Length: 113
Image (cartoon, rainbow, N blue to C red; front, side, top):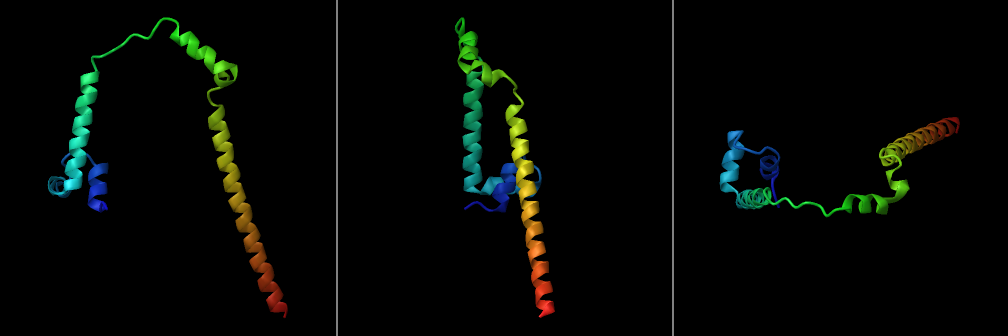
């Protein structure tokens, strides 16, 4: 299990602050992760020069396979996500208000006897 220093060392790259640099030097998990990251960076750097041209007509084939409905409005999924988020917040607010009203009604009925 990784500790808080491992998490901080992952979130704050480089050698600052000194406590994290010392942790990175001692922790086997952090050193292994740094080695994997360095290897991945080297592999990606090796691929940087390998550019392949897309086959002729590929763009048209992809756009044709998407169809009209997918290309109609690129913001559609964002609007749906925002609507769902606001609906969820409104639902939680209504539930909280109902719980509060029920608690007040219960307190009032107990006070009456």
